[in-house]
Length: 542
Ligand code: ADP
Image 1 (cartoon, rainbow, N blue to C red):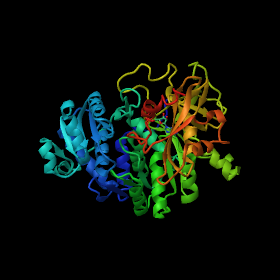
Image 2 (cartoon, helix red, strand yellow):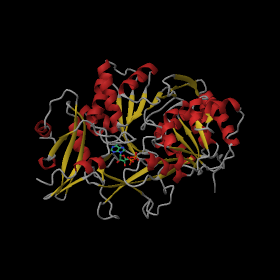
Image 3 (cartoon, rainbow, N blue to C red):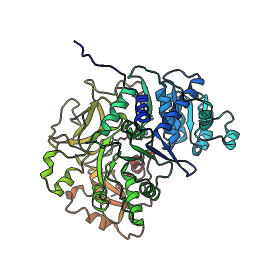
Image 4 (cartoon, rainbow, N blue to C red):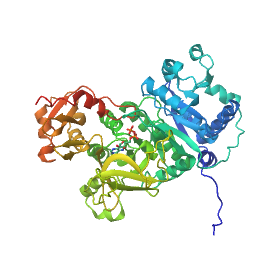
């Protein structure tokens, strides 16, 4: 017997409709590429997305066609998002920090028909224009600008399209399994792969993101997604923001520590999301300026292992909870988030802090398991100590890549993350490493994440990357690449002695190499493959 309840497809347009109707006057603030701050609200964002939906309809695009965006986190980009997905087309967010060849590869692979862009990226478009012939329309996210027309003669302007079109538009209703957006992995290994989200997965993910044990987002929050909209849909926050009707602050292009401190203090941000490297520069800037980031109650940090020292500084020096989470493009990204349970309340502060350094536990909607690294079908015990390959399944987890890949999921329906982890009886998961970054020394595994976390807790070390260097006797040994704090005199022996007593002596790196800078990829993560290429042979003549 079927139940007798209404059925409505879970559609992204429903989120913006809700925000417009029940939170219409709630502020949406946007830092534009020219540095100006725009004050708008959910009602206007909704109206503009309807105007744009009318404009897209005149371009005679078919449903499910891919519409790309090359843009920062700003309100025009947000309006384009809702117009594209709401109309039944696929919003393909592109990471502008990729190499030009990767950009044209992605645009052609996705078969994008329209490209929305911030003026910042005009030179990038001109550089790849000849290689992306499938793109029929370019829409500049600005008012009319003749200098853009000179270079791209048929360009359309976002503000003109809004002015020419009415808000009279009914969002079409369709199957909730329809594709809504497309995002490519950053392609640190091989060509980038497309991940095609559905309306259903995006809405369920947004609901999960708001849960109290995840980010506890509510209509009382002022949310700052520092994580870019081209990086796993800003972790789903633009959807979650409309769903809760919270105030949304879109930070634009300047994501340096100083700009973020100003934004947080000026806009009274209560919750912000970003990767650890961003938070490290934020903390440095806040300390230098004497800001206490008073309005911030919590920050959600993920995308790479967050050093415990960063979590501790947020909590102890800024009275701001740092909530550690884990996920990937293939998982929308929410996989785990670290919040305690009632039974943990009796633990000491140190014990709670220790528990909360891990990547946390899965919310309802996803499940995790560990599989033996050598025996693909063998389950690994979830005892908090045994390591295995982390696999995941759930409502917002990839089922296949955009370009079909028969190996995308296991025969029994799990996605293999390529991460090595432990899971304890309560489900708390600890990422030990990416399988490709683990260091295998004489048959024993050493976690590069653990070596890095210890190093960056040293006050004179700004950044550290641990890599596997080839070794004649042990096959691989850890080498630590270090960026010092500006005035630091720290030397190799001082770095190495800092490890004593913190890990087993055979895990301590064989060598420390000081460099001026470690390059970060488009998502703010260290590119360890490049470091391995540069320094992977430094131990061979030993
Ligand atoms: P890419 O694989 O191109 O970096 P993703 O953004 O999808 O793209 O990265 C997902 C990966 O980032 C995960 O598989 C994991 O290795 C790493 N990661 C994400 N969050 C964390 C975290 N909190 N701790 C450790 N690693 C993390």
